[in-house]
Image (cartoon, rainbow, N blue to C red; front, side):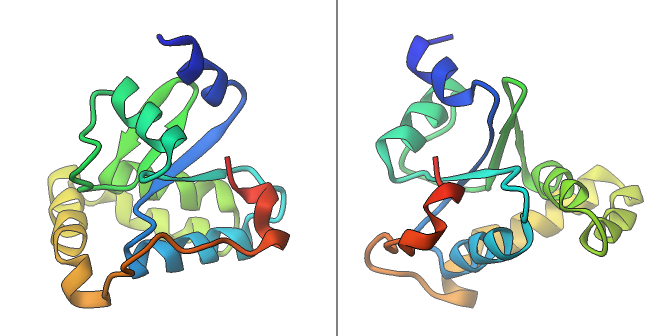
Length: 140
C-alpha cells in the first residue's frame, strides 16, 4: 500500500464520487444533509486525492462507472457501496437495505443501468462543483 493512500484511508470512510455528475453531486448533498456525525468523507474522483485512491485500488482514473466506498482499507463499488452507506446513515435511510436481499447480480445490474446513463438522465457539469465552505468537514 502506498504511504500516501494509507494516510488518506487511515480512520476514514471515504466516498469517491464523480464531481461532474449531477446525480453524484445530489448524492453528496444528501450525504452532507443526513450524515450528522460526519461518518463519511467525500472525495471527488477528479481530485489528486481521488486519483491516488482510485489508482491504489486499480480503478480507472478516466472512466468512472461506480461510486467507490473505501472503508477499512477495502473498496466497495456498485450496490455494495450504496447499501453500506445507507446502512450507516441510520433510520429511515437504512431501510433501503431491504433491497439488498435481492440477488447481487440484479442490484448491480440496476446500479449499472443508472450509473452508465447518469449524464444522459441527470446531466453533467462542465466543471467540478465548488463545495460550500460550511461543508468542508465533509470533504477529504
